[in-house]
Length: 256
Ligand SMILES: [Zn+2]
Image 1: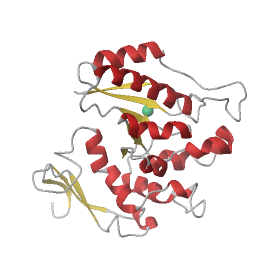
Image 2: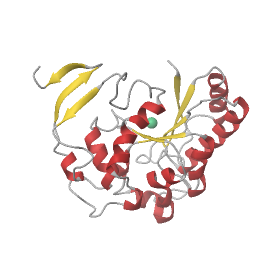
Image 3: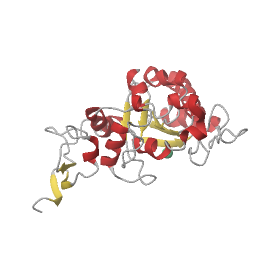
């Protein structure tokens, strides 16, 4: 074990995500700081000082700023050589905080399906202005930030192909909204696949074992009946897994 997960705030759907300003659909309410900041700092210092990777759940722009401020302070004190501290979700960011991920070397661990799950009502909760930093994958990548993608199972389905589709389109599986929701933040097919595989491996200190198909790697992999990079996004939704390998051994599908 080398990592610890902390919680800074709640979720957007329940208005528990900590915002810098009031919720657009609930004046006077800014969400919840679920863990005392002094306690967060203490855990980060104590475990970070012993070499643990710190991963903190933060969804609102207030939660993310709080975590970035604490990371900046504690990483500045500890000066670890290869910390790879993460913010889990990093969903709503104040635009001023977007460059801080790259500056601090903090990974944004994000889940494309959260964008497509939330997009129908996110503007009501947050208002147009705050959407500029919402699920801002491209904006983060442009600053040189490290990202990784995941499913957030069991909160969302364990369906990485749907995640790849969401990452490329920012649309529901039925193709709405046409053209995608804030499509300027969508990523291309190769980037999406990389963030789900090699990006995740790096964020878990497993880049020498997992994430790519190459000699010496663990060969935890699936065989698909289509090309997840060359295909049209909608084809991802019908793609089938024809074989599954764990540590190089066939465990399901094909001729087994
Ligand atoms: Zn979480």
